[in-house]
Image 1 (cartoon, rainbow, N blue to C red):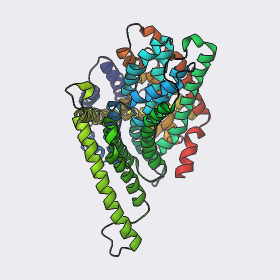
Image 2: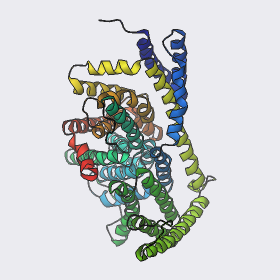
Image 3: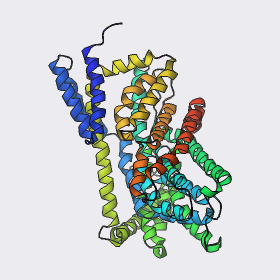
Image 4: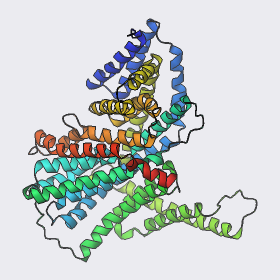
Length: 532
């Protein structure tokens, strides 16, 4: 056995060092960049690293700035935060609770369904878990639900934002998987590979995400049947009358319509993920504006209809103003598009005015300022981590770490399945100390090119990684979702209750991962049907 080069030893020590630094609570972006620069200096002093490699940082940062796919990140964040601040979750929970609450296990079913809807409309795991914990936990506990079942249901439902599209996780992961797939194909001699898009991952994640929702609901039903004392029926005065039905429709239809508009436009090929994210951001703004004053929502509804009309006109007619000769039908379509733009602009203005004037919980903070500030903070965090991860990965590769990873994974027993298993286990444990953003920017570029050279479908690999991270964020004792819920749970719910309550859902996640690994078509069938 040949002796390992000093550069590869430095790469291994660097990887474990950054994990220790992160466990110490230091900021992620600066930990990644600082560790990388320190080991670059050490490697340079030992003659094992060339600082010229770090000259690629500027091109990587510029590439991220000009990456049209990543523009969808702040737009989806704005969409999710705006829906969170506009009390959509509260109305959904109240309406679904009134609909299903009279059944045993009905509140748990309601929380799971609302969690899936919020996952598809916000995609922000922490915000979903906290929102669901604040709104649904007191009601469920008050009505006699087992604290363990309550905790597990909220944590599991809140993490669905990892896998159900449109998801920020899938946007970032799709961009990294696409780059890794192109690099893998070029290293194999294919210089014109079929591109992998974020839309492919959205389509691939749809069936696995719905499968998880179905398994969660099945568990709720099983608990209601075999352990009825854990999930009693809700005793309430509200009956299923016409008013309640109208209330349910008012709460359900707008967010569902927004989800269909965003996800449907991507899957139908009408819009790219970035364009659909822009539609989602505007739609969330107008939905929030309509919520602020339901009696005078006419201009906003007109704006929504105008936005739909614009999407239809732009994909049916040639609306270019630079045409040398405009046919009669196209000219009429252009005039109609002008009218639709005017109506849409007026609807956006009305929504902006209402959201600007509205205040959070009757306090001093304005909703629009709070949403914009949160969007700015989260977006800045994502891209600063991207810069730090770029420095770390450049140094890691400069020290020969990528060659080491390639050799280790290709020499494992079991071929590609052995390599996949090891990568999934490593990512699972990294999920205890790193958020999905760090893992996606640091780990995926290192391991994905190696795996994708082993004849592995990139869409299936991306969905497996997303679902694996979702499982990690649920698993005691370090799952992020557990910490989010612990922060808002009442003192009557112990940390032990949260840990024990979430374990059945972790087993459900493992079952879902096993099914996805056994039947890759769960992730690959729909993208092939939609995009060929």
